[in-house]
Image (cartoon, rainbow, N blue to C red; front, side, top):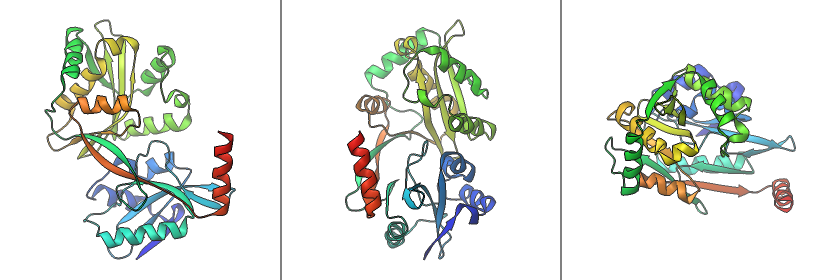
Length: 297
C-alpha cells in the first residue's frame, strides 16, 4: 500500500498543493521547507488514498540510510485529506523500518518502546495565565512595551550579535540554513518576526512564528536581561494571542525538554499534548557508529 519516492521523483507543485488542502497543512511539511532543513528526504505515498509522509534521513558511511530529526522540524505527520486508519499507520511503520535499518522518528503515533514527549498548545484566545505570568504581564504594561512585526531578518540578526545573551541557537545565527529558512518564511508570509521594544525603541525580546490557517507556531524566541525583568516575552505572547491569533487558530508552543520552559508554557494556560519518539537500530554498522559516538562523548 505504501510506496517510496525519492526527492527527485516527487512533484513538488503537487506535493505543496495537496498539503495546502490537507487536514493539517503544517508549514514545515512544504517541499521548500524540507529542502532547506533536510540533508536528504523522500516520502512514502499511500496508493489507496494518496496520503503521504515525508521522511528526512542522513547517510552513514555514504550508504546506510538513517531516519533523522532535522533542524527546525519537531515531528512528522501523515499528510492527508482524511483520517488515516490505524492499520495503515501500522503498515507504514513496518515499511519505514524495512527501508531504513536505523533511525529516530518523532511523530504522533505510539508504538512499543516509544518515548513520550510533550507539546504545549494554547487553544483559547483567552487563556488562563497563572499569578506569576499575570505579574510579568503587568510589568510589560507598566514599562509601556510596544510590539511590531518586521520582514527584515537583519534586525533580528544584528540584535542577536550585540545582545550578549547565551542563546541555545547562538551557533546558528551565522548559519546559512538558519538565515535561508527565516528569510523564506518571511518572504512567503508563512511566518512573522515580532520585536518587543521599550519606550526608547530598544529591543527587549524577539520571536519568530510560523503561520498557517489553523496554527501559529512559537518557532524561536530570544530575550534580553532587561526583557526578563520587564516581562517582555509574556507581553509579546499576549500580543500575539490578542492581536494576531484568530478564533479558529491554535498557538502551538511546541515542546521542551527543559523543565523551566515547560513550566513557563503551563503558566500561560497551555495544554499538554503527547507525541512520541521511537529509535531503532537493526544494522551492525549503525550500532557500531552509535557505540563510537557514545564512547567519544
